[in-house]
Length: 105
Image 1 (cartoon, one colour):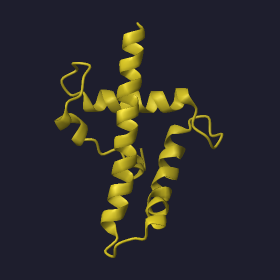
Image 2 (cartoon, one colour):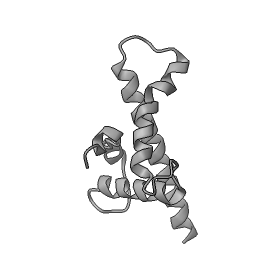
Image 3 (tube, one colour):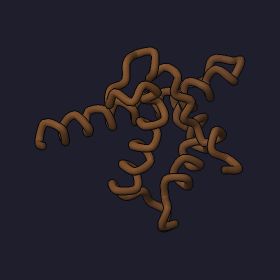
Image 4 (spheres, one colour):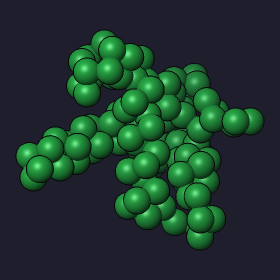
């Protein structure tokens, strides 16, 4: 049980880093000029705020661990197309988790 919980945490953290990287990467790619280092975080801030709003089911302005885990578990299930309980590199790179993907849903 503990090993399963640790694996879930590891997968959740990896997925969260992937989401944040995707959000920041897509924002950086949209800007033609090379941004200043302090601008990189600001460029993805709007999308991160939108993701927070999607995860924040109780609308308190913050995401609880439970809300975050529920959101990430749903994303994992969506990406695990073969339902093996594991994601490979190909499945992880198919992640399109950005706020704009959820707008209007």
